[in-house]
Image: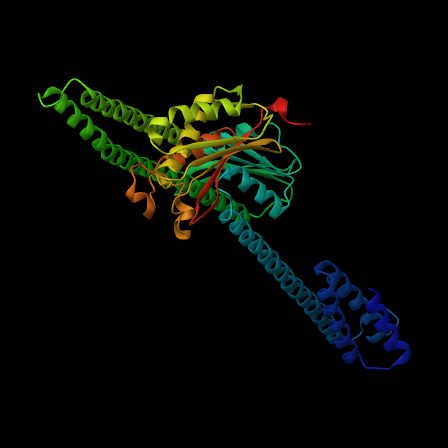
Length: 469
């Protein structure tokens, strides 16, 4: 109204113009008001402009009466034009605002779709979806019900108490629920027309299009997680089957050598060609050694199967590292043959809290690996020292070393490098040793390798009572 009044003052007091010019000026002013304001403001401006136009520019001037009937037609034509123009301008402005809102909604839906595609499979996907919806759309509260797992995942700064029955109803019957008092809406999450869950949001009320988009994206995210989970289970089953096949193949191949030796020895003992003296004792020694070898192969196979199944049970007790190393060296004398095992331990090593039988098995794997690859005239060296809150047991051989292209694979199950093909073994020793160490919170590492041999380290955590606070 101020704009119309200002134009009237200018046209009456400053610039003398005719009624037709004033009418066009008023019309432009009304259009500007409609563009800047809205339909209500433009309608009021039109009525005020009509009254001022009648009072100041239509004869008799100074009154709200009209002498010439043709001026009535002009006046109402002006009023109608002003109102229609105001309506059209306001409608165009509203559509522009709606277009901007739709664009904003599409941008947020796109951002949400990208976030759902980048969800981490190692965490609950439904919880991540609820969090992303709350963050992207700035809802006060979000609840996502996964019908498959029966879990309800919450996100947002607020909670929605008592909404769980609505969520379950929407997930089973596909219903839609709106609560105007709290600004809450609950909708079904569908996939292929079948509800697989439900979604509840509270805060800024989304449009039906946005709500449907949210439900569709949630459905895609949940189905993607299920497909990934099924693929992981299928891959695990495939790898398990491959592991069984490789294990049977490796064990069967390794069993043939001792069984052949044992068969030859027993056949000779049963024949009449072997005397009762040293020859018989030598053959019995062969049988005894090969039985130990078979027992070791079976132990490795059983431990690897337990590791793969995740069924390792640790019976931890405090043990001295020196005692375990001495026990391992004693049991490895037969396998060592003419090779010498030297041990050099740091004085005053504190005890470690381990499952002794498993830890000794891990040590035997590393020592056996060093014996197999070490040159005949060189000893295998074992050292132990304290390093912070761990004990580091080092096993060093004088073998040919490990080629650089194979170093990253030596801890893989059943992997045997080019240098290993000249020695017997299943390729499980290092893998078993590392898994046992990791089950204790430690590790097995390749420290160095080269033409002068290789060195492996077994890291064992100290008992909690030995760790300085």
